[in-house]
Length: 103
Image (cartoon, rainbow, N blue to C red; front, top):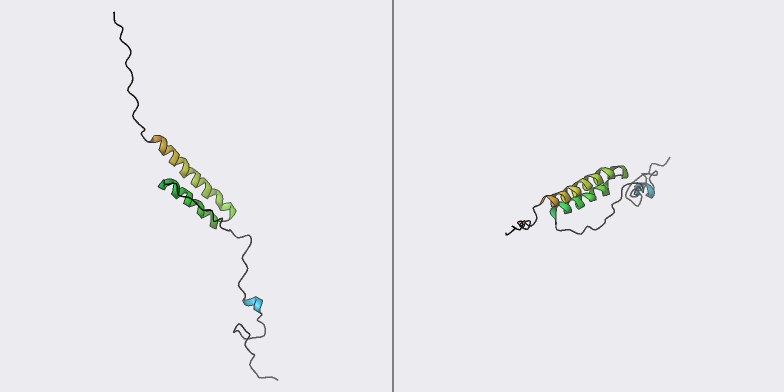
């Protein structure tokens, strides 16, 4: 019978059952969401830029979660365009008065 303590392995763990592959970092799951890391150029419109930044939320979701983000962004961009139509534009030209007939 051998009463000697097991020698530590190179990783500092002791015991005959540990192998280097047991202590290695887990591999990334290829089916996990992966950010697209697409650069977004600011438009100068705070509302539009906020909606475009919201697209980054989809980077951390599974594919089935993208639809909600895309619909939300689409709705926000549509509202921003609608707001542009509601802004008062330049004043309308004065209406011309009908010619008065001279007799």
